[in-house]
Amino acid sequence: MFHFRQKDPDKIHFFCQPEDLEVIAPPVPAQSVLPEWYRKLPVVDANHQSTTDSDLTIKRCMPFLDAMMTGWILPLAATVRLEIKEDGRSVEAGWEFDRVMVSNHGVHQVAGNPKEPSPPCKFHNYWSIRTPPGWSCLFVPPLNRPSQPFECVAGIVDTDTYTAHIHFPFFATAPEVINLSLAGPANLLLEEAVRRVSERGIIIVAAVGNAGPRSEPSYPAAYEEVVAVTAIDRNKNPYRRAGRGQHIDLAAPGVAVWTAASVSGGRTKTGTSFAAPFVTAAAARMKGASPDLAPERIREALTRSAEDLGEPGKDPIFGWGLLNARALGGA
Image (cartoon, rainbow, N blue to C red; front, side, top):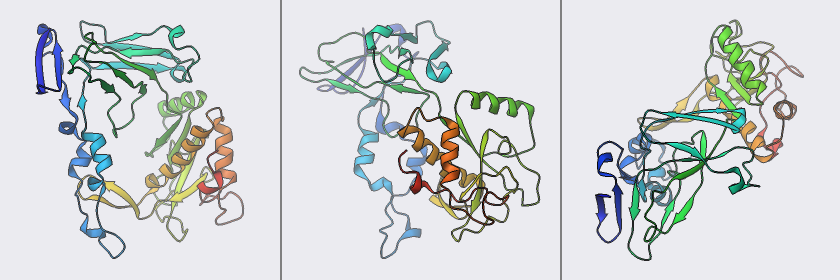
């Protein structure tokens, strides 16, 4: 094996085959690959300093920062393409590399696990690790990073004695709720995509668009399968540029919503695209609490619990009314 690098001669060593050096991506300290949004976030946001606000951002939250900076990131040797079907029950993988990148564990090896019937897969890793006697390594997905269409399984390996490659077991996942922040005219391809996704039991939430109250219905929000969301302000007045129509299902806060920004850390934003995620989060919470809950039951619960605004019942401005997440509870 080729000795590649060591951060501290008394701590950890990484090895790969000589022919793999400078071909496969090397391990890197987690602190060297912090997300760009986090790098740009100021430690102090003076725009929010007040008697009751210290104006500190999450950059001063040491537990969060330590979780992101601790350890090493082991990149995959090559880009892997995953095609996930049937809600994670079928997984096909492809790559442009002369070694195996994905394979399966035997289903019998994890019989009865809560991810059944999704197949137990694993990413192949071509780095091995050495640590001093008595030291082991905990392998987990990169912490506080965006979720992937798979869920890696954590494990502890006695890297002081185990010398083989350490692969990364995972289960493919499928989205259960999709948030769409786009609006435009009817589109046959989009309509077909919405139909197919909906048939798989996935909930679709979409913003109604900001073309104005006299505009034609925008899509995909106007498709029957989609939960269409409009925006209101803090006084429960409709956003003046939001679309209207009988297709609207719910209203949510969407005027002057405090939103993460790439430069100054955060700022207020307005639009139906900022209202839709409130409904998406509520639907995802319900699905997480009750995984077997059908999409139509979730949609019914969302609309039934809404706070009626405007004319009694469903109307073309607010739909069934303002999202009431508290009334939904965790179910």
